[in-house]
Image (cartoon, rainbow, N blue to C red; front, side, top):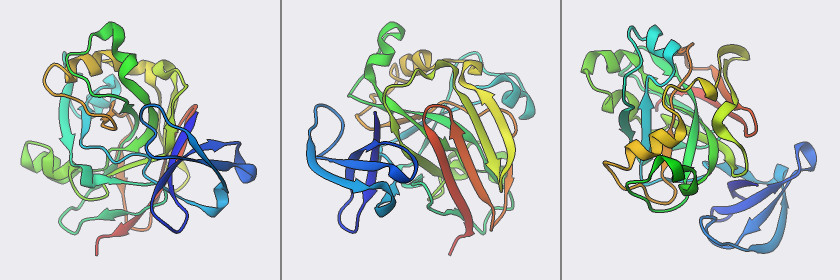
Length: 257
């Protein structure tokens, strides 16, 4: 099942995406998709709605250097334990929405990632049952002001600008996430290409590790790390993250007003 959050001229709503391409439709959900839900009976053509970020989390928990080749390109080895950092909920933006390039940075990078959407409140989750707390998966771009990351010695400012966490296009709930192709293109040119099987710390390990120190709430998002090939974006560029079994998240880069 693919769960989208969308606008059709009124308040944001959730729906189930049915079909593909020009024939795709969205069956509206009554209320919130986490937990048991039912359809309203309203069916809209996909072409008539604007897709929004599929979820607005209370927090985005991200993992650094979780692909060995990416850790190497950053000048080191992958950490023995998951390296956790947080992105504010205000970084979240949706498919097609602009990434705002801040004037305070001279280098802003793309980082295509698989995102895990949490389906229920959880703490101290065992590795063996970690998938039980997952609602589904979506595409993410962990946008980073690379010069500020290096200058600050910690990552809050560099990772925390508004629009620095595009998510979408929807949440896929019935895929196996352990070996999916993931790629990032910049203006149509492939810059990153990997598979989720290359994660140093897999999804169950990440969930178990994160929940030893913080409670995850329904709708929270975990960014699992980015493959090698990170690089800068410029104003006027278009960046797209594609994950097998999910779809493509595309965003233009604009100057921050």
